[in-house]
Length: 81
Image 1 (cartoon, rainbow, N blue to C red):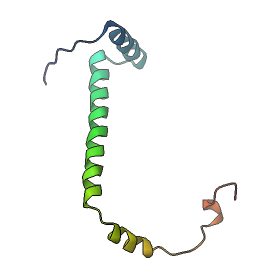
Image 2 (cartoon, rainbow, N blue to C red; image 1 turned 180 degrees about the vertical axis):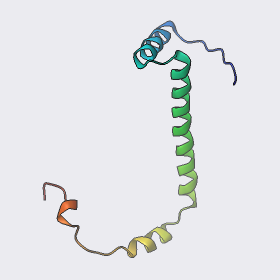
Image 3 (cartoon, rainbow, N blue to C red; image 1 turned 90 degrees about the horizontal axis):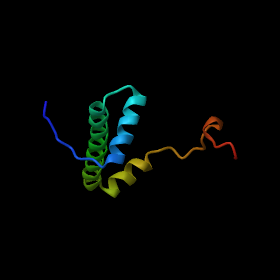
């Protein structure tokens, strides 16, 4: 495990400590969780961008054309229809 020295504004540190206490975790655990969530979001965005670049509109249209043209069942309709 790596050690990281981090400088935070005092107000952010106080809020971080309060949230960690409220959640029943250490500041270290809260920071590790927050960093993990942010990295996951950024990596997902990057993955989806790469997938989108490989996509072809013609293939999408071909798959969409195979979908049956039928009305949705009543349970799938919005309440206002």
